[in-house]
Length: 332
Picture (spheres, rainbow, N blue to C red):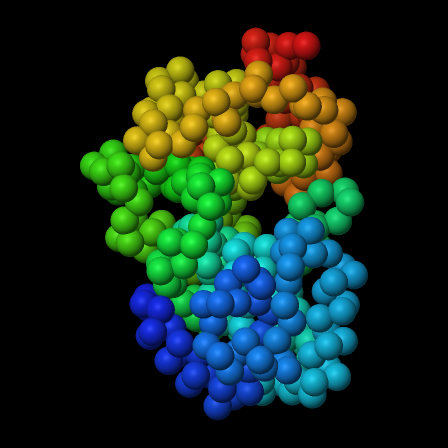
């Protein structure tokens, strides 16, 4: 199924939500955007509110939501709407994928991360104690409604996290790289350019058996940094990208990456491992050993030959560890 990406201002979004009531709406919503929701939705008995989405992206809360929706009478022909950041839409999508063996759903990302990446592509997932997104299903939203008015409500940390994911796209695609380097401002056009790029890749490889793997650039180390340092996902991805380039790619690509980071005004100290006194190496390597990209021979890494030219290389965990620990930042 091909997902449609639609652009709305806040009033247009309210009207779209109103129209969706014709199919009976069941929603999973981040409570932090409650005041931006239409009044009928704020008081709807069919909304499951999340207070801490990332912490609640678990099997236990998934069960609570399914039980709640079933008690409220959700049917196969109804629709689930996920409104929030990437954790919220991941959770809402997984609920939609499993209830009645799959009901339709709509993603309404409210964070920069969600708009450029997390809400697009149909990878729905839960976290476990062993790592991020280890339980999940492919279940594409029918539509993604992007309303950049939500960005006005975000903390600087959330914006920085989204910019970290944009930095990834700026290395995957020459056109996005050109847009980033042309302006310091994250424009609506840049957001939609990233979203369209991901949607195009997903449309050609929905089940992640080929080129979709390139979208994992920076994520293998990124997920491990996120787990070990408890830092925002996008910052962790950018950090993972920084060190994978240093360890495995030509030096000039690291320079290109740092110019992108500078242009996006991401705090470079946040991407420097030496800035974190709480780095737990054991947790880091444990997370890498459970990464979804593990294969029998080791780990599939996404590397770059140049901007717009990613490739996959499989390395063993000992090889990966040796390369990383050869970097000065990884030395105890």
